[in-house]
Structure formats: C-alpha cells, structure tokens
Length: 417
Image 1 (cartoon, rainbow, N blue to C red):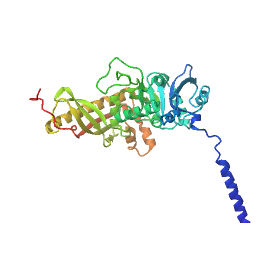
Image 2: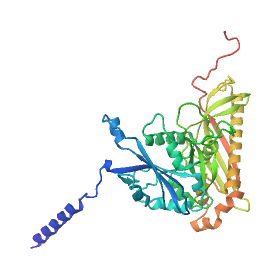
Image 3: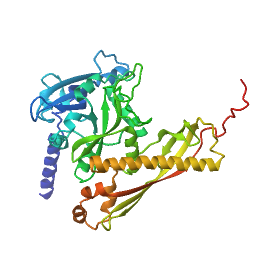
C-alpha cells in the first residue's frame, strides 16, 4: 500500500515536469529585434522623452559566415514616449520583430537631458527593467543622442556593435575615457560628496582650437582629417547626485584614473618638455603598478589627506638626444621635473573638483569610511560638506624603467652627410 502511494506521487511529479518543461513562448533569434544601443533626448512635451533604438541585424553574422544576405546591418528608429519600458511595445508599430533589451550594451543620453532635474527619475526605469544589465555603458553626447547615432558611420566596421566595443575598449585602455557603467552610476549617486564619471562623446567638430597641451582636449576638439568616422569619444561627463554638472578633459580623466584606485588604469603614452631643451619633448609611458598610499587625518578643524602616487615611467624617446640611461645626474633632474609637473596637474584638478563640482571622483570616501566605527557615524560627519574645504597634499614618486628599445643615441656631431 505504501509502495503504491509512493509510485503515485512519483508519477504525479513526472507529469508536472512534462508540463513545466513547455517552451510555448520561445522565440527564435530572427524573431527578435535586439536593441544594441538606446539614445535618450528631451521630448517635445514636459515629462516626455525622445527615444532612439539602434537595432543590429543578426543575419549579418550569417552572411559573413558564407550565407549571402542583402539586409542592412542596422536599423534606427526615433519616436516620442513617456518611459523606457513601454517604448518596447510602441516600437512594434513599425518594427516587425519583438524588441528586446537583452543585448543592450550602451545607453546614450544627450547633455541637455543629463542636466535636467528629472533625469534621475528616467534612470529609475533602467534600474527596474529586468532585461537591462548593470554593465551597460553610460555615454553622454554633446548633441542629441539620436543625431549622434545617425551620424556614427564606421568606415572599417560594418557591424556597428563591434565599432562601439573596440573604440571604447581602447579608449579605456589609454585613459582618455573612464571605465564606468550604470551599476557604478547607481552606487555613486547615493553617496554624498562623490562624483560619477560617464563617457563623453560627440560628432560635432570644434574648430576653435582651445586645446592647452597635447592630451588636454575633449570630444569634438580632436580635429582629424581624412576619410574616417566622425564620432569622437574623449573626456568625461561629471555627475553629482544623479545629474550632470560639467565635463573633464581627456587629460583630467587620466589624472582622475591615476588618483582613483577603483578605476582601471592602463598604459598611458604622453609627453613632457625636456628639462635640458624646452624646444623638444620627452615621450613617456606611464604605468601605475600598485595602489596609492593614502593617509587621512580627520582630527581637528583642518582635516587633511596625504596621498602618494607611485608611477612607473618608461622614456620611449627624446629628441634632445640626451642619453638619460647613462647619466644619473641628468636622470635625477628629469625625474624631479616630471614629478613636479604631474603634481601641479593633480593639484589643479583637485581644486577644480572642490570649487566647481564640490565633490570628488577619486574614491576617497571609501578610505574615509574606514575612519569611523559605524555607517551612521560616517554619515553624521557629512563628508560631502567637508570635502570642498579639505587640505589635500599630493606627492608623486617616479621609478624609471627602460629608456627606449635602444638606450644608446647616435652622436650628431661629426656625422656624415
């Protein structure tokens, strides 16, 4: 009798498994329209947005594999809507396939919308939509995001999603743009006094030539000639409490990455004036191989932060033809000169964040929290109000690596014709 009851229970379980394994709502890949990038702009009416879908064609990869296809590689549509979630169903008015956010990799927002007071409410849709992953990149465009997506026409990449992937990968590696996503956006906007950095981009060219230094430019100021894509990704969009406040140049973004141990820093190629011949430059590669040394003193009325940035520097070339590899005295002068120049740039950046943004993008709040026994004690200290008046002492410690592939330099005097 007991065995019959057990058999009947097992039979019921097997029947339930058969029904649960149904896949009646399954859709094939070619029945979905994958929004690879979404652009958001201010709508014509209050509390409305203009949304742009950049939809990639999965048939393109098949044609590259040998199966011919005359279908276009992408489709772009723009329309007015109230929110990001219901826009999926509205899009099916003109799109024959079911719109999906599962492959969404990039969220582009116009600078005008990012500075709007209701922008945080709009981003709340991103947090609630289950198909949107937290690893989506947040990009701020100088012009409308719809205009940026339409004008982005890669020359060497027919697959636009591959273009975005590669250009951002190398931009992050060089430090010209920050390595950030919407997960960091939601985490940082809740911390008072902290600043989030988004990627800044544009297709509009600025011919005013306002650059102050080789790396000190922002998207739109890098005037390249020739037949190439007109989209530029350089610099950072600065967010505080969810809204955009301003921008950082590519050089300031690099300095921020070096000051912030939570941001990935790659190999940065840059130049410095030669201390023995100011007409020529010293080409260097900067690498930060270990974390910064941060000392915090919050006692008294004048709190201070002392930070030491260790940098590994390789001198790749110097047109002054000075052999720094064998001359220790000149090498020491070069070391002091580079350290002084970098320290000055760090000081200027920190003062800018204190006066203009009144917040820090360097991740120091994580170190400050360790000075308090509990979170309520840290919140009572009010780091956001203390930072603008904080005394920050920065020092740079350089260790030289190689001096180019060939350390010996040819002698110019007495050389043949």
